[in-house]
Image (cartoon, rainbow, N blue to C red):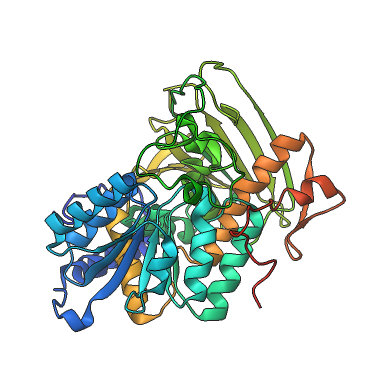
Length: 441
């Protein structure tokens, strides 16, 4: 079933121009989706998959729906996961890839056109940047960067090498986002002056655990990579590494980055904010984590627009029926939007219902967009520049929370003004030999 045969709901009072544009958009996407793909081996895109956790299955599922992708290599520091990943490719795609424990072996494969990076966050740029410099195109899972400066390196490496980067914020590719964009552009809501992102998902956290021997078959030194050297601890490994700053980014950089991406998109801003404030704390004290379980961040842009982010990791109660969502506030109305595949417009002081739509979440389309961009060399919908602007919100919000100060940020120089301590937090130390260059030259 295609994304367009899941019949979307298009109701309410549409301006004629927006209705026509959305109808044309959906028709063209449906026609493109119906075009047969070539099965010629000479036209196949050869890829390597680095990191074989939960996202790996999604990628393989999408490749199984296509005839133009071949998985030449898989890589993971865990031997058992590596073996299972090879079996999955063999069973679903009909060919067996090479298996590596060191991502550099994947980058050495000259036949590989592109790599998919789905590791813990601290490895995203230390793999993606060398991959770009080695001439590979890169699909990197969110957040593209673990700290702010990595995002600049990603942008500069992609530009220098003329390579393609797709960030794993897949709602950018949904037909729902495209249709919502047409409504926003139509002027129906007036000027969008403020947006809000929320991420309200209950998380369970492990109790503190003792350090333990490294599991058999795991290259723990490679797992740590640029992170500080410390004994193996099961809480900091499969399934829960995101709650520790050495490897992850907490709620705001996990699912929150999806909602921040859509909030920035709907607000129509194409630079970094200039003023950032944040509050966070622990409400639910059960379990171990290094991040707050509730957070509020306000970002102000130079033109006066405001973006607000909120997460509550201790609750199951969403907003407007969605655990992850957005509100776009215009001078004439409001749009409620969710990356679960939905938007609803409310107009005027009485909040009269306007256009609404339900559809897909963009996963298949996002992978397809990347593959097509590898082939055609056009820029994808979630390029390195788009990723850096969105992930920058994650990192600036976290720095504002940790310093408990108002940050004043210069978007041109990408420095925090008059606060040396906060400015140093835009980057981090790296364990050798996994450091990144200060700049791409």
